[in-house]
Amino acid sequence: MNEFHFSCIECGATFPLSENIYSCPKCGDLLQIEVPIGELKDAVDFKILRRLPLSVWRYAPLLPIIDHSKIITLHEGGTGLHHCRRLGSLLGLEHLYVKNEGENPTGSFKDRGMTVGITRALEVGARSVICASTGNTAASLAAYSAKAGLETVVLIPSGKIAYGKLAQAIVYGARIVQIKGNFDEALKIVFEVCSRNREIYLLNSVNPFRIEGQKTLAYEVCDQLNRQPDYFIIPVGNAGNISAAWKGFTEYYNLGQIEAKPKMVGVQAEGAAPIAEAVAKKRLTIEPVKKPETIATAIRIGMPVSWKKALRAIYESEGTALTVSDEEILDAQSILARLEGLFVEPASAAPIAALKKLKEADYLSRDDVVVCVATGHGLKDPDIVTRLYEKPVELEADVSSIERFLGLAKREVAVEFPKTAC
Image 1: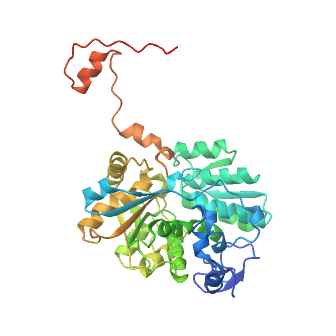
Image 2: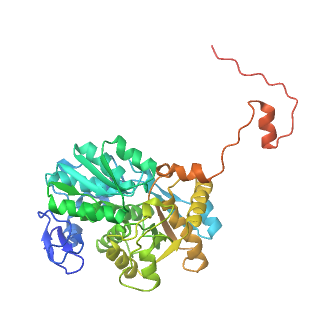
Image 3: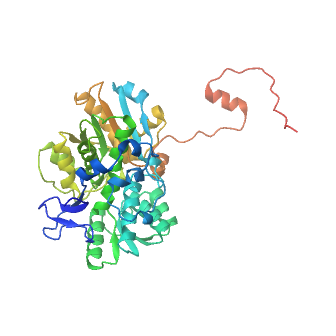
């Protein structure tokens, strides 16, 4: 097939995009969308493309959307790639960057996939959309479906979602159901509901159109650097993001836009690390974590649906995966904020926590170009900060109290309060 089409990651069967499917009808495994590299090489003028504003839809020719009049966008993508000089100096890394996906419209990388996913939902005539979520997917889906005028249903694990994310889903008008179970159980229910009721459209990352939007993260990083990174370090929960980024890097390489592909490094929390454990043991399969626990709610997933894609990304790129503790995550969150002015949610701090371990193991060298992905804004989960960080000091409302607190010498200087200008 010399056009966009589905292919099964396991049996290799192919299907036209006209079929509304989420998994392989032959073997039941995950699908991905194949891009017609040869045709795009000839058809796309990348010099003109790079003159367009940086965004997901800058890369429209590389995305499998037919009817561009149906595009639903909140102007996602175009997020900052921050050169973290102070943090890099501390770690001995001269070219350390953080791609801050918290700058997206709803505050997380999920918006990249959702703009494409919701547009696809309109193309297939959906009236309702549904997802299981630990928070960010729910917020993003609710926003984009509101823009599109679609009914939204969200299943979340009871008591396991940060209130900053839940508030977003509520205000956008989603119908929210808390289940007495974890994310993996919620996703299983959602998948079965969509299999039995074709009028409701599934928008978890098992949907390959979500991955198509998320792959633009890789395109953007390369265009912002004017080259590919040497290492790409990313938090791993349900594993859609690392596999999407690898797809993006691979496509850009095959299209002749970069000279090499980066090593992919996945980071998981110690209490929810089936992929990191598999990599440590050089396995091709994972052992699910039945009761995943971590302070980083966005990656509190024990049975990531895209585990097979993630392992392939890591092994094919000759990368690695590792775990970090909750304590290391919180320390990294604080360090990134205080050295670089970037406030990210705990899951987003996991790659920063991993940097020290990778540097100490001589996995990274001073001259490497290293990109860490911060997947969500810190205001997604503010309760962590207010609960665990130091509390504000309360003082009397007078100058001397403030001066004593600041350790300033008492000065006998007459100060006249400025008069209001007439």
